[in-house]
Every structure is written in C-alpha cells, then in structure tokens.
Amino acid sequence: MRSSASPPYIKVTMRSIWATALAVLLVAGRLPAQQRSAYEELQTFSGVLNHVRLNYADSVSYSQLIHAAIDGMLRALDPHSHFFSRLEAERFDLIARGTLGVTGITLEEVDSAVTVLAVASQSPAAKSGVQPGDRLVSVNDTSVAGLSVSTLELRLAGEKGSRVRLRLERGSRLEPDTLSISIKRDFLVPHSVSVVRMLDSTTGFVRLDEFGPGAGTEVHDALDRLNHQHMRRAILDLRGNPGGIVTSAVAVAAEFFPKGTVVFRTEGRKREVDTTYTTQHDGDFSALPLIVLIDEHSASAAEALAGSLQDHDRALLLGRRSFGKALIQTAFFVPPGGEVLMLTIGHVLSPSGRFIQRRYTGLAAEQYYSLAGQGGTAEDTLKVYHTDHGRVVRGGGGIAPDAPLPRPAPLPVWWSVAADSGFDNAVADSVAQSLPATPAARAAWLAAPDRWRTTLLPLFLSRVRTRLGVPALTDSALDVRLSRILAARVAQVRWGLDAYDELVARSSPDVRAAIGYFPRLHELLAAP
Image (cartoon, rainbow, N blue to C red):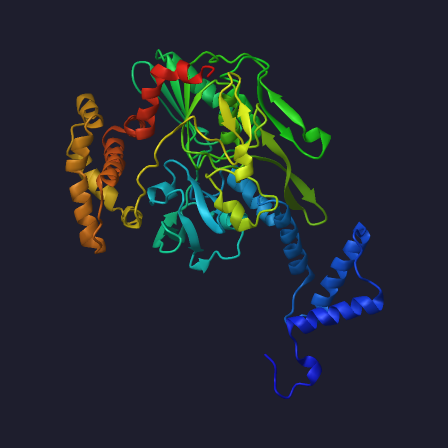
C-alpha cells in the first residue's frame, strides 16, 4: 500500500519495476547472454538469496530459503522427486519397518489436491470408510494446503493407539461432499499378498496389495498352495496396488515367464541406469492361464508388471486404465546434515518400448495431475506398439486394459460418516449373531446376495437416516455395493476372515467378469 506522503520514488508498479531493472542492466552492461555458465547462474542465485535475506519485509533464515529453493528446483524436474530432512527420513524408515502406527492410507497429489491413492486392506483407514479418490483437506484441524505428500504421510503416522483427525472431500471438485473422521493408528504387518483362495473348482485368486521385499516369494507360495488345490487357471488382482520395489516386480513376473524373458527396461542419463530386467529362471507357472485385474489406482511397479504381461501376451488385462506413474528413483544422502534426496534417475519402459509414466515435461503441475488414470497427451496415444503376437497397444500415461470394465458405484459421504460412527458394524454384527455358525449356514450366506439386500440394507439405511438426519438416497448399483460390504462384515464376524475374503472375491463384479473371459482367453491373446 502506498502512503500519500511517500516520496515519488516509492511509487511502484510492475511497469516501473521492469523499466528500472532494464536500466540497471543496460548501465552495467549485464544483459544476459544466450548461454551463461553454471558459475554465473550460481552467482545470480546467491545475489537473490542475499537480497532476500537483507531486504525482505519479514525475517527469514538461510535454512528456510535454501530448503524452499531445493523444493522449487525438484518441482521443476518432475512431480515425484523429493528432499527429506534427516528426521523425516528416520520416521519413514520406522514406517517401512512397521514400528510406527499408521492409518493404511497411501497419498498422491492428483490435480493439485492431496488424494488417497490406496487404502490398505483391513487397515484403520479402511475400517473408517476412507476410499481411494478421497481428497485430504486437513489433518488434526490444520489445512494441508502447501504441504507435500511426504510431509502429510509423516503426519498421518504416530504412536500405536493414538488418533488422527482427517477432513476429506469426495465427489465433484466444484461441489464436493465433505466428511470428518477420526482414525486410530495401528501397526500394519507388511505383507504383499493379502488374499489367496480358490474361487471355484478350477480358478485360483491372488490379491497382491503391494510389491514389498518378499512379493516374489509370497506370490510363488500362494500359487503353489492353490496348485495343490487343483488350480487350472488364475486371476491376479493388482487393483489399488500402489507399487513398491522394482526388483520385486521382476520376481513376481518370473513366476509366469520362461528364463531370459524381458520384463521391462529402464533408461536414464547415466549408463548404469540403462538396465534390461530379465527373468533368471523358468517360472513354475509359465503355462498357467492368467487374467490380471487393474484399475486407476494401480501404479508404479504394478503398472510395470501389467505392461510386461500384456506385451508378451502372457495375460489378459481387465479393468480400468492404470494410474500412469513408472519412474526409477533412488536415495542420495546429502552432507553435512544427513538429509536425503529421493531423485528420479530413470524411466520404465515396457518390453515393446512403451513409456508408462505420464508426460510431465512441458506441462504445468495441474495439467500433469489431471491426466491420472486417463492416459497421456494426444501425441502419446497416437503412437502404436505391438505385443509379441502383433496385437496393437499404445503409449501414453498408464496401461490400458485389453477389456475395460465399468467403475463401481461411488460410495457417498454419508456412508463413510456412518462407517466412522460404527453404524455398519452395529447392524452387521447384530445380524451375524442371529446366524448359525455352521458350514452350511456359511455356504448359504455367501451365495445369497438377494438376502443381503433384504436383511441388511433396510436396517442400515434406517439407522443412517435416523442418526445422521440425511435422506441417504441410493440406486440399484449402490444398493448392491453397500449390501456386499455389510454382508462381508457379517461373514467375518460369524465365520472368520477366510469367509470375508471368500465373499469379497466371489461377489466382485470385476472378478465375475474375469471368470467369464477365461473360455475366450486363448483367442483374445492370439495374433490378430
């Protein structure tokens, strides 16, 4: 603001700023050349830093300015390189080792909003009704605006048994629904495979939640167990899998390929980054008919594995286009304070040469994030690649399935509020206690979706409408999804976690669709 008593030289406009700067440069003979040396650029940075330190209206420290400059520099490179303080790095290590209580939420920045990418099965967040796609607004009543995903993931962690309050948005960005929930942190045992079971007399099902250090061994043991139950074909579920360790993806792929098969390649500026990852042994399940489920929350290593299986015509991919994130990153320790730089050093390419990572060069951050799960830019998807059998696949962000499946009905905000309040469990647990604990009763319950709707849904909706004072309107698709969730809770309470897993897997529309594709699998993967 300008005072009327200010001398003339205090009056500032953008035109006067630029005119003054240009005059100074002309007088000093310092108009920038086409190309300046690194030393000259550093001189410029140092000059700006000193002017800010000496002349800025508020007091700021060198540490604040340098860290902000580093964050800005990394932001100019790509959306996934980050700089961590020593304390942040140590806390991430505690989270990775499972010694710090967590919520089970994986975050990603999408369209300039901190968004839930994945929710771990049976985690505190899952029990509180958090859904992939929810947008985080505040943590413990503090806005998340301006905070990085890594900073927020650290704030979500804490002592086992402690609580963290979250405010979330769901639905349209213009007219979102909001909800507030309180999540009790807990330890999560880091397992990659969460569900292993036979869906029928011939179809095995393996749910791979993430690519942890033991993912290859866990998948092998799961398939071996199903093999002893006379499995003749399998469904590998990568929906909601946020990725993990690249070499673990290779280990999983090795179960389905002969020795020497190219799983994917990595390319970077340094020669040692350029690596072709191949299988080191003949997979025990290289002839097993395979269908893979993916969705918009399948990311990173999950996309690399899916792309490899697709390019080699080894599996049919069903579901929705994957997230579109496939970069190789490594940690560098930065002296003298022991900070950690997590830097992108390469890209992942599928065997046919497709880039999986969504384009970020030349795009504003908002443009980049808006493409999540929606493909790349137009010029990306125009380029055609071919699988081993000659089927056409395209580049661009993420991996497109061979057969698209519709998205499930979105869960409304009142559902999550009701779940956080325990209304779903109260209704389901009451019904569970009225059922016999016999194998026959279990089998009858698992096979009765009409019974779920008539027994559970009216009781639940009545409680929601009475306690929350909302209309809780539904349609047929939402009725089906809510009934499945409530019925799964009944199965878990009455007959245990195995019954829960069986109901969720067998009643999934995606899984049922996959089973229907097996008779045509050979035809669909054959040369056109």
